[in-house]
Image (cartoon, rainbow, N blue to C red; front, side, top):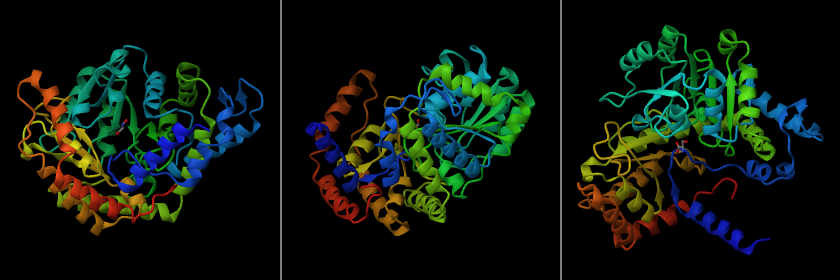
Length: 428
Ligand code: DSN
């Protein structure tokens, strides 16, 4: 066995146990999920779908894939579930390929408003091979449905995305449906961030309002890296061929052999997500985020918080992320709606509670953590990103080099370490 790799895995384990993982799209999986991921299922090629494989020897793999798909159908109350997409972006690409011809129009939330790359962002396949149009959020940071309706009427999209990656509010799928119906578009909910909250019953499901649902399986759902595409009854009524169109888009359209170890791990995660314990988990994720958001002076209705750092100075996302990292708190820099600086030097951070909640942390712990966050961010004050673009990279490089020496942050790091180590990490 490779000493080097396993030593590095141990090192990463220490980081995951002694720090506070607050990137809202991350989580800790169970030992069952980990075991399936590390199993001999990775040895097998299985191009095709159960009962229709290109290679022999797939009788057991068929059972595993059917089992995973059946669990997904039951949990999300859909007639069709495809569990082979390698991850969220391929799932969204396959979905787009299934319902749009190259060059046709897709409408999605702008990246800078909390949308996803695959929903029509610059440089993504979704704007390279399709005509991408973006709606945005208003000054209240909530989706501007008036603008979305105007854009839909003007551009007649074939596909409308209802999904977010940096949006702290609940989504009203009925409003998306009204717009989709006006132009006859396929409506797809990308619930990657909130699928765990939906199956846990704390967010309402889009199942009655959309045609297709895509989701990653590794965020609030707490499964392995992977994704699923599901078709609703409404979707099948609109287009009875949706299943075969999606299957063809997955393979041969986009992928080769499915990752069978990943499929098995998805099945285990879905078994876990169907339990009353998971429902409690999902409820606690939202309760924790609400308290944390309030303590940080903002709001959250889901698992994440988008925090503007404009009070600390100009373009402070990098500085916030690095200061918190030095303190043992992992978050990611993020643009804020109406980003005043640049996507490369954004003005906010994005953080959330799914992973902390998996360790058993509750509201009182969030209050404690919010204090450390505020103290750590205070250390960034005065270290603004230069207004002159050509000076920015150097400034951030110097900031990163110096901030690790900050005594106050090192003190917080020690407190965080002591605190975090008290909470067991699932799977470790
Ligand atoms: N990278 C994911 C996230 O962090 O939200 C989206 O793909």
